Length: 242
Image (cartoon, rainbow, N blue to C red; front, side, top):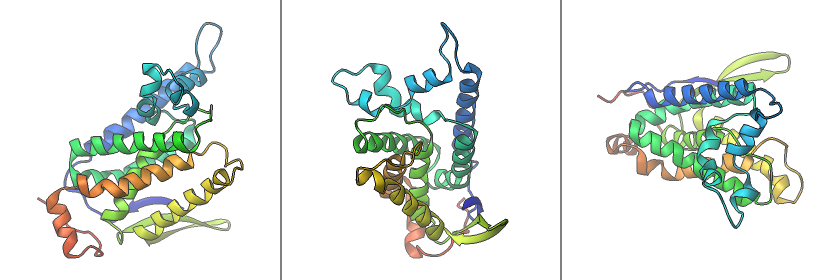
């Protein structure tokens, strides 16, 4: 399922969400400019290895400052067009409303916190891995967890494949996001059993970010917003706050 839009209006322009999308795209374009690398010049692969989270390196007895910063730098790097395209779509659809619920400064802190927590969750659950973990999906998973708590019954218009056809279905957020997080747990099960998980997907980062976002959203959202939601927490949100 691919989310396309939702029914939630926003009170403020999503400046931070737009800026995050722009930063991620700019970083990805820089990666592309590096190319495959050549003698004496590091390419995109070496760049990702240097600034992505490598669990085994982060848990080493002696860690450089660059390695310590990789939980932050890794969330602005991506491994391909589909990777960044999907992440930015999810960030745009869910991020603008979560930003609206807490304001710009709090949203920056919230987003970075979820991204760092997601990276550390992957490190803890796969400590011996030498594979770099990159992408904004951990931070965006935190945004999705927050969205689920704030807007459980808001309609999310989703593109769904039906055989050879595509159709759009309006699903409540709890159904769409609940389906998504269940898929992440199912994807992580092989690793729990000691088998090889699906290559290229940091499921534990997704799960960790989602849980942290859902658990901390009430600490970040505005009090006037939370008060309005307490009165009718299951009603679709259609109000603009002035």
